[in-house]
Image 1 (spheres, rainbow over the protein chains, first blue to last red):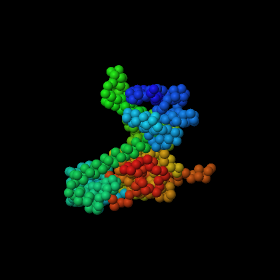
Image 2: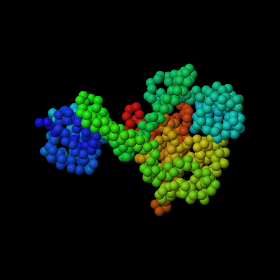
Image 3: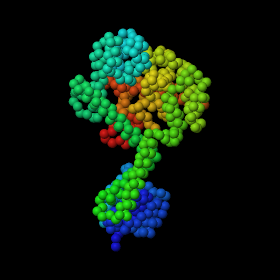
Image 4: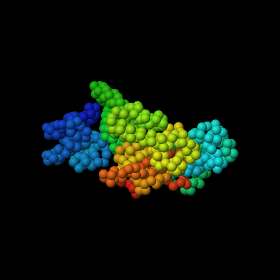
Amino acid sequence: MSKTVLLIEDEPNIIEAISFILSRDGWTVVTHSNGHDANQVIQAKSPDLVILDVMLPGKSGFDILRDLRLEHSSDALPVLMLTARGQAKDREMAETLGVNRFMTKPFSNSDVREAVRDLVQQ
Amino acid sequence: MSTLGSVGARIRENRVSQGMQQAVLAQSVGISPSYLNLIEHDRRRIGGKLLVAFANALGVELTALREGAEAAIVARLTEANAHHAGGIQNVEKSANDFAARFGDWADLMVALDRKIRVLEQTVDTLTDRLAHDPHLATSLHEVLTTVTAIRSTSSILVETDEIEPEWQNRFHRNLNEDSRRLADGAAALVDYLDGARKDQRSNSVPQEALEAAFEARGFHFPELETHPDRIPSVIQDLDLSHQAPRHLAKMFLEQYCKDALDFPLDAVKAALDQYGLNPIAMAQSQRLDVSTILRRLAFLPQDLVGPIGFISCDSSGSFLMRKPVTGFHIPRFGSACAIWPLFEAFLSPHRPLVQRLNHTGREGGTFDVVAIAELPYTIPSHNTIVAQSAMLIVPVSNPSFDDPVRRVGAACRVCSINNCESRREPSILGEGF
């Protein structure tokens, strides 16, 4: 049974592209495109990895990650954060909140594939 | 404000030593006195026939004037070497040899150095805006997101061996959509950076609205030179939509009219002919405050005195008026460079400070500035003195390296002077800026 990646991103064409490349690699990709209820969706889908955008409608990726890490059951759930905000303070904040990998836009498909592979195998 | 070594300075030096009036020399070479004034103060470059005409009119060898030009080139080459952290040994001798043997190449190198500094200044400006401007940060986020989508989609199309026609069509459509979005986003960003929508954003602060309205008028109001009663109609024409900038405009224009009354335009022109752009000499001869002269010179038509910048502030450091000049970057937000003479002048009120500045950043501006702080009035109920400072900023096109120069920036955040003892916070600029 293939492992599940939950992609939380609000840009439809990035959703399609990432879904396509990860599906081709054998992952089951579930997508969600707003921040409001992202934490509930993570609970409901129980993914093996979350790919999380920072700037989302309703709730930022930082807030989603913070709430996620407050739930101890999700301690082991790897989170790959994608953002155009590549400033050091953003990276530091993500690391403080418990991100496993922080990737700045524009990234390449191979960067994403490699990161997903690394994080789920850990 | 000496610019000895430049062509303009040599012309002036020869004219003054012969006791010749500017008007006489101007007439003999067939130009206006005000244009000659610009040439003498290095705000217009000359060569060819006009330079020959000057040599004939002054009765000097052409080389006597040209040597100045060569000295200026040597100075710019030396400056370029220093600016780019060059390691040329015996730089002055090398520059002299280079300018003498390959004059055209030396000119080109100086021009390229200027161009580099312009580009560096652009980077400074953009970095400054990015650091302080949430709208710009959001716009760039949008552009980066679209670029990511394009990169990812195009990689799929190029790198995937077998791709279903349905997916292929979908990705082509996505690429088309994203490329349009990118074009629109980039155009909007350029509009913003060009200030095309300045009236919607930049001028939300009354001071900025006022400055923008004045800039549209060239910071000069000929109708008020002799008719202070026309202030209301000028304010009406400025098209300021809010009460606050209109109030500021009234205060400023009342001062403008008072200055025009104290130092009428004809007297200004005569003083320019006699003293050039020397505010202190003018103040002494007219028995006026230096600050009056600074304001008067700053708000003259550009064709009379060339581009001139001006800043005034109160003792809190808040800007009261900013008239920009190319190469002297004044921050839109936050605090300015602490070592500007504008602020230093508060330490010795009523004593003018004269300083040559090299403004870091990429336009490579060298400027002669005159700053003065004054204590215009007290607030009796608080027993408080309110001080104001003003600074006139005059570009120097061919600076001499014999003169001491103070290096300044716009603000610490975007300043590249690493060893500045007045630095308040680290710069966001990396090595090489």
